[in-house]
Image (cartoon, rainbow, N blue to C red; front, side, top):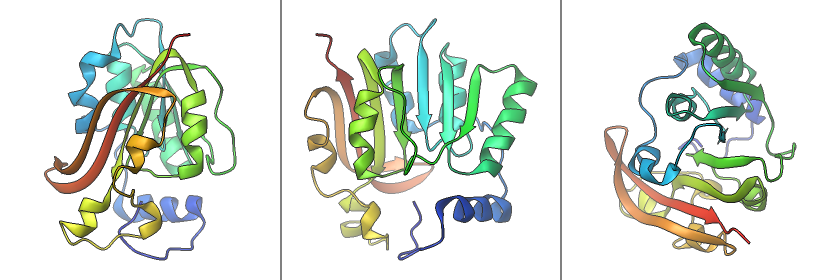
Length: 203
């Protein structure tokens, strides 16, 4: 989400405009640091399926596909998705990129062995992210937290900033495998984040 407060543009229009202005390179070779740091928890990916929520340029989809996952990549921007579809076909990647407005459209239930959501916050989606996991599946989430504002002094729309400890409390039925909250180096600069890896219990 943007550092600009009070944006009222519809999500698809906003992101299409941003990609048109700044350009979009599909599948850049720079996955989320949090995803890469927790690679050992992904297990044996052969034959397993992953979901990349609000995938943007597909950097995390590329990483997951490169490590053996079949990936569903969803984003509200049809500009981003069209670029990813073309690039996935050209490279022969097992990435199915689709336009999905996750503010309005439901996610599949019990379908994914890994669900990744980076730099996106939609609190009423927490339950759907959990339900999308297969038993034993991993949820990997990281987004902006209070340290980004309080410690680093950045302006950020307060709707899209996690309160202290909020992410840790957001999935009480999952088993927390790894958690971090504070200032971390992200994309070459400090960023205040909350970061979670949690597992759906096998009953």
